Image 1: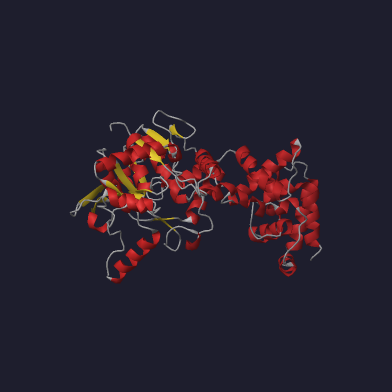
Image 2: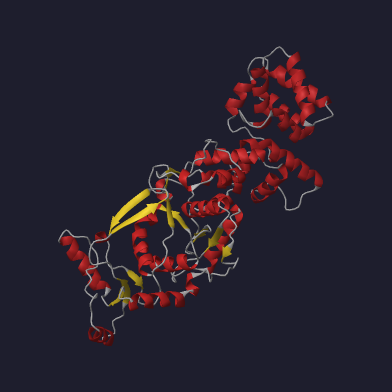
Amino acid sequence: MSETRVRFAPSPTGQIHIGNIRTALFNWLYAKKEEGTFILRIEDTDQKRSTAEFEEVIKQEMEWLGLDWDEGVQAGGELGPYRQSERIDIYEEYAEKLLAKDLAYYCYCTPEELDEMRKQARENDQAPKYDGRCRDLSAVEREKLEAEGKEAVLRFKLPKSEKKIVVEDLVHGNVEFSSEVLDDFVIVKSDGIPTYNFAVVVDDHLMEISHVIRGEDHLSNTPKQMLLFEALDFEVPNFAHLPMILGADRSKLSKRSGEDYVYISEYRKQGYLPEAMLNFLSLLGWSPADEEEILSIEEIIGQFGLQEVNNSPAVFDVEKLNWLNGNYIREAKLDRIVELATPYLREAGYIEEELTEQEYADLEQIVDTVRGSLDYVAQITEHVDIFFNELEYEDVDKAEEIFKQEDVDLVLETLKDSLDTLEDYSSEAVLEELRAVLKELPVGGRLFYHPVRYALSGQDSGPELYNIISILGKEETLRRLDKALSLI
């Protein structure tokens, strides 16, 4: 396998988890770095839970993040089909080969018999695994069981003597397993549907996968798959098992681990930028050589390698994600952030469906003023109320206390008179006017800016004061200064 060929093979049974999308990203990065092929394969043999709708969700989230695939569902390719449900006849062919080589057999044990088998094993302090009772059934015995209406699964025959299985993992190094901890595992269920371990081996071989890059939770499946690769005379691909992603409490990432959002769709809906998500996800288990944290996707591809992937768990740090995303929001083109913010502002009732040219210009100024405070775009509704609604002091006693400080009445009166004569309400002009007023007053900056800010916004902190005044305009600014003066 001289060409690098990797695959992302999700099951369309629900929303796509952060851990799954990180796996997709690392496969995509490796393909880009090695100038190889990235394949999207859909593992939909779970017929009860797999849906076309969830397959669309997978494609939607990958497209949002820019994880384009070279082969696979939708893209096509010479080694398809790329849905397992469309490959059943292929699996049957290879199951027959194992039967012909006496490396598989039919098992007629019922679920009740298997439960009893495991129960007895536990009572005898043994591993609860299949005891092989159907392994050497004669043709006559099989016919009798089938005549009784018993359905059969197909099991793989493990070697009779203990076999050491060494997984040469590109992340964890050599990991050794013993065949003694395994049992004759099922490779085809009674309905003819292959199990994961069998189907993935056939698919990876026929699709010429060179590197299997997946989550660490699949490491325990690898010895079974290596036995199947060997039994079918397939070349074994390279394996790289990515570290687990933990929540804030260092348990496996889930809503139970304290994280509000564990699906990538939830971050898209909250207004995280895809390039920020890619940057953040790439750092979950991988470290660039220079330890930089804000990296373009081109920089990540240029530095990415499986040798730099850590073998210890990665912690999903929402605060770090928010910090990264905030940086990307501030650096993005303004019209892009305005476009992303518009649906949230409409839903909150701040803006109409259609905006005049002036209303759009005002909206641009508001978004530009507050975006420095955003961790993600959906937060914008928490920062714009002062521009759209009537100002109400949540704590009137606090407002009176601020405004009744010595010389505050002088500050507010002087500023009001000055702004009343100001014609140019651009941010630059307002800033110059504020500086000029402060210079002529017998007060320091703190006694000037804090009461004025509170008078105009009802807040102790927030956007630059000159931007607030510029956006409010003369009439509203003077009205709010009058309101503050009325409390003195």
